[in-house]
Length: 309
Image (cartoon, rainbow, N blue to C red; front, side, top):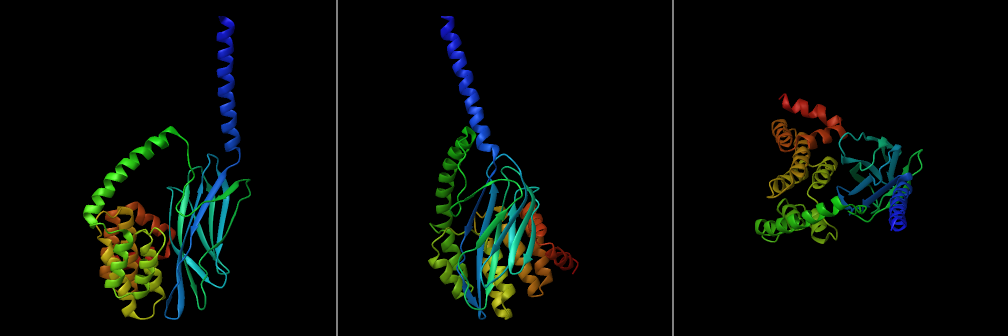
C-alpha cells in the first residue's frame, strides 16, 4: 500500500516541478507583440493624408528595458496623432528624418501602448508602415493581426471572457435598440455626409476594417490642421460635433474626441468654445485628457491660454 502512495506522491511532485519548469522556460525570454493597421489615403488640398494605428505590448511577465519602436513610410512625413498607454508607462516621441520614434525606458509585463500616426505626402502615400523594434535585452518579437491580442490560458481570463461575452451580447441587443441597427461605420458615414466631406464619406462607406470612434478625433484634427481653408476646417469640427454625442459612446472615446474638437476650435480661434470642450473632456474622463496632454505637451499651453480668455 505504502509503495503505491509513495509512487503517486512522487509522480505528483514531478508533475508540479515539470509544470513550473515549463512556465519558467516560457517566460525566461520576454515576448513583445505588435500589430499595425494600414492607412487609407485621401487627397486634401493636393496632399495625400492617411492615419495609421500602431500597437505594442509586452505579452510576458518579464520587463524589457530601453525599448525603441521606429515607424516610417517611404516618401512620406509622419507625425504623432495621439497615443493611449498603460498607466505609468513613459513613452517619449521623437521625429527623426521623417521617421517617428517611440522610446520607453522600460516595458513591464502586460504593459502596452497604441499610437495613431498621421502620414502626409505630396505624391503617393503607401498604405502600410515599416516598423523596427529594438532593445538591448533579448526578447522574442511577434506580429499579430490587426486588433488581435495574445491568448492567455488562465482560468481567470476564461471566466472574464465568458462574462464579457454574456455582457457583450446583452450590450449588442441594447445597442441595436439604441442605434436602430446602425453600426459605427453607419454613424461615421452619415456624419461625414452631413458635414459635406465627400472623401471621408467614401472612406467610411467602403472601409473593410472595424472602425473605432476613439481614433476619429486624431484623424479629424490632422486633416483640419493640414487644411488651409477655414471652411474645410469648420467641416471637420462639425463632423466631430455630430459623433461626440452618439448614445453609448465610451467615456474615454468621448473625452478624446472633445480634446481634438477643442484643438480644432483653437485653429479657428474660437477660444471660448475650445475651453468648453476641454472642460467637458476633463469632466468626461480626466485620465484620458491627462494622457492626451502627456503625449502632446505643446497643446497644454494652448489649453491654458484658451481657459484664460
